Length: 282
Ligand code: FES
Ligand SMILES: [Fe+2]
Image (cartoon, rainbow, N blue to C red; front, side, top):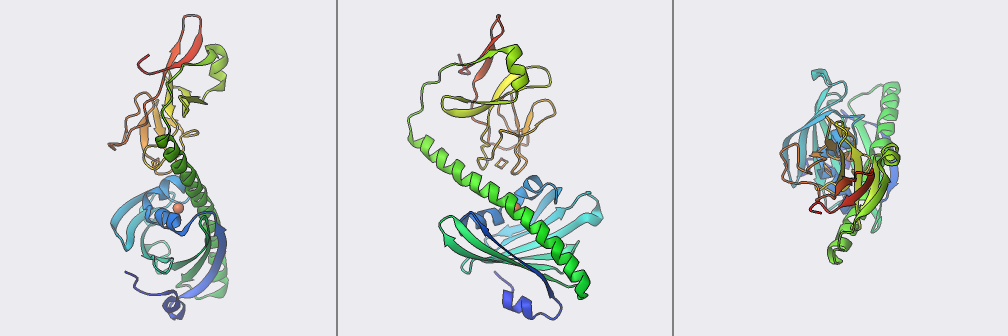
């Protein structure tokens, strides 16, 4: 369902082209469409632009969402509708209500190879004054550069994480062997510390209550990276991609999701202060 075309938008007398942004993105068109349909990442991955999102409607055609911009006050909300035209590798975003109401973007994609896509974004605004159009166009260009860079990093990481997960699934799981981490006094200043255990990555952190725990650094939702995820409220690991939170001690979701972190080894501290990662049941 696409209510119009780039040509129709360009010919609309109520809209004016403010800017055209072009770049090459290191991801396939399919991967970009996956990202485009993923409205849930907006306030987590792009937290400098958005503070909250609510889905109003969605389907194969795209989605309609209510977005909050910082600071989160009612006058900083906008309703955004996105419609995709998969066959022609393009989509349009329409600001229906709130900030920027009436604005429409078109994003046109050209596949370059299996992992690269040329992207062109055209910004059409209801604003007519040339000086104002130039200022707003410049702002949209700067935002677009940052948003696409954040999306590109996520898409590339996801591509690699999926490949690694496939390789792990195909290989026999090694027998978990203890991993010595040295004396606790020397370890504490190095935390949080990412270490391999049974060929999988885990992060050792000291919780607010002083407990040492290890947790998987791979988010079970979309394989998001948890190596640098903040530890909040004592023991909550928040994924940077969609903001899902997990209990570092148990791996359980703290938001009611069924997904949980992969089982982690136990951090054992011996009487002599030596720290070792051991199988959870060891
Ligand atoms: S990848 Fe979606 S919340 Fe982690
Ligand atoms: Fe994004």
